[in-house]
Length: 402
Image: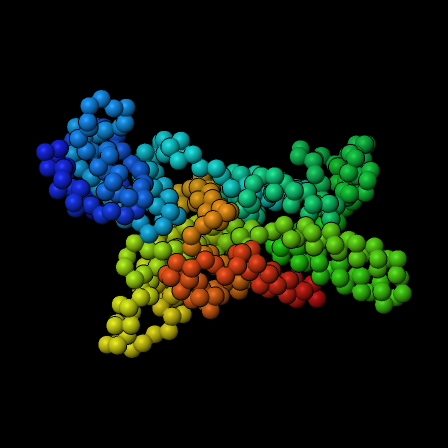
């Protein structure tokens, strides 16, 4: 962050010194007890001229010319970088009120509650605790999308839907789900605890594999029924398979278990001949690291041992420090920023997530860096690349199942 002193009688010097580009800036008063003015802008010089320039007559526009004594700013290369930097600055300057200033909408998640004696799944936008055994899957674009996926997924299993703690009693009448044979009914001992735990494990594997575990299981059952000439059973299993695939197709690439939400986001950089790499670790956003990709790279490699782009990307990401979260709230805020960018209709930059082995698709990352540096549009919808990840997970499910 750069800093300059401001005096009204020498305002032209400040306006000439600040860049005419996007930035996050802080205006501070001579009074240490006064709150700073913090914002982001796509044109810093023009914004400061409006806020600190001499006012002409009476005007209702905000003018801080007589109050500001210093200006701090950091140039940004993209709207995502500006939003992330603004979030960090507001959190530092206003630790008690920054959330009201940002108005972040937390990302909807599917929560698998494993701490309960009889686990269940629900939709939430709150992470209860970093120490909880619950597993969170997401983020989803809207709460409606999360609820639809959760309901469609649970229709394929017999895990309970009720929200209260169970005290199994054979005299309990049960609910409509048990009457429709859509629940194992642990509430009145309709199943053993072992059978219910096995069903919960199947639901958990469905979420972890993006639905591919159940797709594989149903395909095997259908093929077996067809081999045994049970064509009616095979037709019923084929119809069930279509429902499973329809539920799984609702998952976008970014929707996975939060602890496995790892990857790298490529954004334009404020540095010349560079792009900015934001490493994503468990849904948490690391500070950006620059990667020089323009003519400066060519000149540097003439005087030193040339490195492949994959090696240079790995070296750059190795310098990124994972953020140290102070609580679940900060994790939710990072997810909110990530979700807001990802689900935009038109966005700048590209996101590449790791596969199940934790490896980045380096070839695609290199091509993505080239597109972002040249200002080109992504090759396709980011959700199209989700198949590679779930293909790996399906393979793992098959290995475990065998």
